[in-house]
Structure formats: C-alpha cells, structure tokens
Length: 157
Length: 425
Image (tube, rainbow over all chains, first blue to last red; front, top):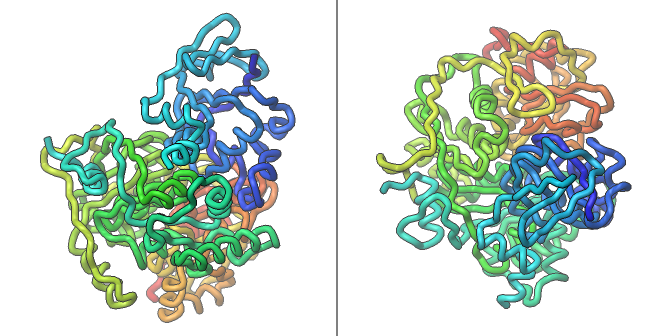
C-alpha cells in the first residue's frame, strides 16, 4: 500500500524544487527541499512507494528536470494529476517516473489516505473506489517500461 | 489538407512531406542550447550513465552561463567550471556573462524554419524569427546531444489573429499578459500559439519575442510568429554584426490549415495590466490594482530586457529619481543591449536616477542570484514569472508588468501606470 500526498492546481516547478537549490551538485543534495514552500514537512514524511496526487497543470513553469528527479529520488512511486504541464510530463517519463492522468482523484482523496496503485493496469484504489487513469501513448509507455530514455538509448546502443 | 506553420517546421525536421497533430515523429535538431540551470546534471549523466558517450555534432550545441553569473558561492563556481571545461574539451560554443541564453541565441544563432530544443522553458521565444523552439529537460537534452535527434508529439495549433496597433503607453507585454489571462495558465497546454495578422506585422521583431517568450506561461509547446520583411531586415543586420549569413526557411500556415481555435485581438483595445501574485494568468488593469507599496522593481529578463524596454524606462526616468524606499534593478538582456544603452546615454539616466545596473544575466527573474527579496516584501517585475517565492522568500509577492509600469512604480513607490509621464530623450 502507498500513502497519498495531495496538492492543489497549478503546482509549478518552483514549488516542487526552488531555484536556489538547483545548482547544488546533485539531486540527492536537493531532495530534502522538495515542496518546501507548500509543505515543509513533505520531504521528511514521504516514504518510498508513496504517491503524489494533484489537480490541473501539475509541474507548470520551468523545464528543470530536477522537479521530477527529486520526487523520484525520494521514492515517490507515481504522480497522479488531473493534467500535467507538458515539459514536466515529458521529463518524468524520460527519467522513469510514472505519471498518470485522472480527472477526479485530486478532488476526492485526502493526504495520508492509503492507496493501491496498479501501474500495469493504470488504476488506483482508494477507500474502496477505483480510479482508472488515461493510458499513455505506446511510444511513451515503452520509454517508461524500459526505465527511461537513457536506459532505452543504452539498449539501442 | 493544409498544414500550419508549426506542422511544416516539424515535417521538415522529420524529413517527411506531411505531419498531423497527435502523430509522433523523430526530428533532427538544428541547435541544442543548455544553460547553468541543468547542464551540470547533463554532463554528469553523459560521464556516468551512457554505454557509448558521444556527441552527434558539437557545432549544434551551445552552452550559456546566464542564471547564476557571476557565481555567488563555490558550489555554483564548480557547476560553471564543469560546463566551461566540458565545452572546451568537446568544441562546444560557450558563453558566460554575455547575456540571457535566449537573447544570445536570438542575436547570434536562430534562423527561420529551424527546430531548436533548449534546456530552458523559454526556448519557445525563437518563434519571433519563425523558428520552432521548445523547452526540454536534461535527459532529453542528453539524448539529442548523443543522437542528433529527438521525438516530437505533433501539437495542435491555436491561432491568434492580431489587428490594429497598440496605443501609446501600451506594450506587447500588456498584450501577452492579457492573452494568458484570457486562455489560462494551461490554456495552450501542449499546443502551438501562432501569432499573425496585420496587427502582428505592425510589431517589431523584438516585440514578437515578448509574445512568443511567454507562450509557455499558457502551457504552450512553442510560440510562432508569421515571418515577414522585418525578420529579413533583422537577419541582414545580424549578418553585418556577426557574419552569420541571413538564411533560413520561411514557413507560413496554408489557407486551409486546421487551427484548433482562432482568437482575435484588436491591439487598440489592450490596456496596461499587471499579473498579480502568485500566477501569471491573473492580469488586471493597472488602474484597478489599488494601493500596493513596493520594495523592489526589476527591469530585465529574456522577456523584457532589450533596448526597446530600456528606452521606455529611460524616457520615464529622465530627470526623476527612484523612490527612496525602492531598490530598482536593471539588467540588460545581453552585452550587446548594454553597449547600445551606453551609446544612447540610457545608462547615464538610470544611474543618475538612483537605479542599480546589473550585469546581463537572468538576475531577479531567476530568484537566487541577485536582488532576492525578503519575507513580506513586494516586487514589481518585467520577469517571466510571479510564482510563490519565485524572487526569494516564500512569503514575498511578485507582480508582473511592462517596463513602463515597472519604471513608473519604481518612481512612485507603489504600483502605478506610466500614464503620460514619458519625457523626450
């Protein structure tokens, strides 16, 4: 089982990881600052396998790949949102962080509820209700299945 | 079926006669630009994650240090050193301190019809010259650097038909903030914003940069402007300055091209606006903002730090002084812009008014290099974003406005429109 952390609409990448931390030497040094401005306790509380749930336009703003990277480094299993900003969406797939689209889940679940995520089916069960998420186009799903874009490049090489 | 300008550029980059929205294509990239926001991570991945590290064509790569320049601590200095040494070792064009990355690309590289990826969201600016620029992360960058290619999901196109002319004292900045307010922060998510019509052709190429640059703030994959004689003149001038031949391919949308939606804007109806904290799509008329005291004002950034904006600011500041409670920071977008401002006597006006001149860089817009604001402080800025904490403390506020509004506010100490206070330079 995973725990859920719920965030609002229009969460921009500055809120996921602020600019003053981006030039730290590596993602492991950045990750303790994840969501610092919105929920300073998040980075300490999140456990590997937990899920981030949000409303519309998650990850809007800058192209910083550090945003999905810090979530992955903290062990976040997937991000489920009503919609994603395109660069965040693409970056997440490229680094192998599953991103799922569900119109309703963000409005109906609460932080710390338990969830059962089935990545292969693209479904999440919370409190007896199952949310079916939109499937990725096969091209993107394949990148994700191979563990990200660099893993798929190395496979081709 | 006809194609839009953006579809034609993707088709050319993919080497196919036709593309349709929703298709995924492999494209060749004309340039790949990366700055100090993420290049250190790209280099680390290049060195440690690749089975066969290689660069498809170093001549297509441009590395630019512009976010935290000059370095403010040893860790940043190490990031810059890593970029500098990697660029030198691999024959990659490298700039530091010369200006904001998109301004450098605009001044020296971008050609109409090119497909360019940049590890920065505002790469969408290159549509001012009729090029398809789009922001990517460092993994995408690394893949394209190694293979010379990337994949693209062909987006749908929104058409913005512009008519008429902006009134005096109203700027492209007011227009694009108004458009983003109307369509919302994800109103163009994964779409192209194409600007055209007689109103567009009334705007200078620099003005068009302002429109395309903020396309990503509505979620767009890119912004594109119809190309015309003004673009040809820009490229000819650039040829004289830097010796880069005025080339490129001029694509325009077919008469039967399919737009997802067409919006029409009469430029003469646009008025000065500010976007209020903490979202870009919140523009309200400056006249309705109420009494908002400011602690800092910023003129600069890839959106609004060119000679046009500096001239506007100087015309308002001449003979006046910055309010004693306000820090007014000015960062020209490049050294080229800075030198021109010096030649025109603008910097003299700025310094005598009490403004602070910054080196060309992302400055206050980046929020962690210079001019950071403290808890409870308020900034009015020509920067790209006003997200929570964007310019410093998480409990500070950022308003976005035109160079005229920012300068008038710096004099008044609170947010006001420039009204009729321009003086003749």
